[in-house]
Image (cartoon, rainbow, N blue to C red):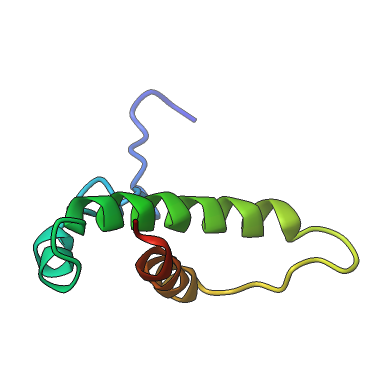
Length: 87
């Protein structure tokens, strides 16, 4: 490759979730449903979302592995857990 060769990117990849989006934008809505616990629910939701993603990624190897689930499904599992366990 010569010094005058210009390369064009074939793709641009970045982590939008948690970087470009406010992951705690649900606090106000959660506060209406769970008075006094909106922030707690939001924090637990995000924690579980990350944990579920990490666990599925780590477990998705070899025979008998946990089957793939889309990030959207994991994201929905997290608030379900959080709503049931928000103290």
